[in-house]
Every structure is written in C-alpha cells, then in structure tokens.
Length: 321
Image (cartoon, rainbow, N blue to C red; front, side):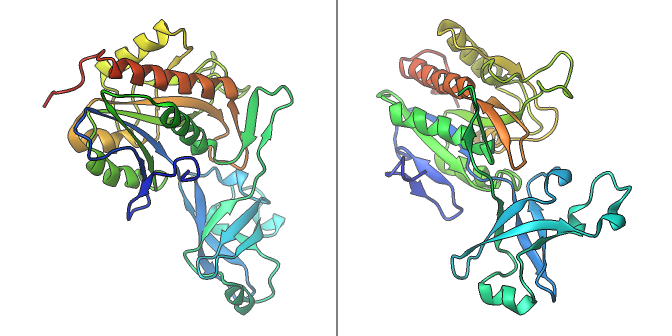
C-alpha cells in the first residue's frame, strides 16, 4: 500500500497510517485491515512434510489439494507446496478432514532438506491464486478479497480526499484475522472523532444461501447494523444512509450474525461514533472469492460523499466529550 500512499507510516505492530495524526482538526478515521487469512509452519517431520496451523477462520474442505507459498523469513525465499492429507481410505466417512490431519508437500525428501531451504517453524504460509476479471467484466475473482477490496476502497478515498476542515486518517490494520489485534493499537494512536470501518461480508446470494437472498452482489455496499463485537452508532448510521440516498448510491442493510470486525476495538477505545460499511464477497476465506466491481465503486463513492458532508459541517459528531 505504500506504493500508492508513499507518505504513510508504519508502527511497530505493522499498522499503516496515512494522514496527519497530530492534527488539531476534527478527525475522521477510515479503517481497513490489510492482513489475509493464512497459515504458519508448525512442525516438519523426518520426511520433509510440513504440518501447519491456521490464522483466521477456514473452511477445512477448501484447503486440500491447493497450492500454497511458504514465505521463509530467514532468507526471503518463497517456496511452493501442495496441501495433502492421509490416504483416501483413512479419511473416508469424514465430512471434513481436520487441519491437524493435513500437511504440505514441498517435494522434499527429508527434514534436513527443508531446513536447508530456509523453512522454519513460524514461517507464514499463504494461498497461491491468480486474480482474473469475469467474462462480462463485472466481477473480480481472486484470493484475499477479504480484505484487498476494503484496502482498495480506502486507498482511493484517501488519494481523492480534498478535505480542509477535517483531518482524514487512513488506517490499514494488521492481524485483524487473528482477533482484531492491530486496531487495538491503532485506535489509541489515532483517537478519531468519527470512525468508519470498511470490511467485506460473505455473500448470501448463491443457490445454497438464504431465501430470499441477502448480501447480494451488485446491489451496493452494506450499512452494518451490528457485528459480533460492535453495534453501529445509530446517528452515524442514519447520517451515512441519508448521504447515500441524496447521492443515489445503492446500499443494503447488513447484520453480521457471527464474526467481528475492527469496529469493536475502535469503538471501545474512546467511545466515539463508529460503524462498518461492508462489501458483499462470495466465498470469503478461500482460494477464490468473487466481488462485483460496481459494489466497490459504489463504496468508494459513498465514503467520499460521507467525508465531504462531514467536511462541510453536516452532522453533529464533533466536539462532544
């Protein structure tokens, strides 16, 4: 992200900040976590097979047979492997093979060979997947759309921001998937007056989803009423809804029945108005997710519109204890 936001700063925890943190103007913070779900090396057996632990929530059945990349911190090497499991007969009858019974095959012949290549316990493991545009140019396929989508939205808003009366701070947080850890650190540094957290939400508009479907791709970003960690500040929610309606920006209300976001940590830091804007994405936490380009564009326009209104003095969110 620093390639697009070259004047940004990174703290000791790995969070990235863009904007004037020392400004005395009213602050509006945009949060977007930048980590993806993945794994790390746990142990290496005598034959060179690697056992691993997940980071973030995974559907175990999407992991088998996939390619992964081990990022060796000792020498910077990136090594490809394939996720395997016990012989087929050993797992027949199991609905889902547990991650504890999976391993990564590097094509190695011994533990020493793997160690000499630079792999060691704790090395990060990431999915290998190629991004593509759908045949009709309306969707994007790829891994880690949770949360590359939100990072894209935040970056575009920051690059186009012309606010003069307020300070707009962009925060790309680390370790959200490991328990919204980065936002606990970042919120204390930023201490904004208004907080907008951007994240994605698993689409529910496929054949196996709810009837009627919800979180429909192509129908705009979601205004999140609540997630597992936070309730939306209702005045801010109404303000964002009003701005969307004025600007004819499509939106849909959303509710996260499970799972949390950075909003919980941010909201509890200083109690200031906080809410989540979500973007529906199909097949989150897998090798291949799907997002509608029009939803990303609508979310960018919505956040820009809200910030512009706040900069013009609309709403009543600043100056309160």
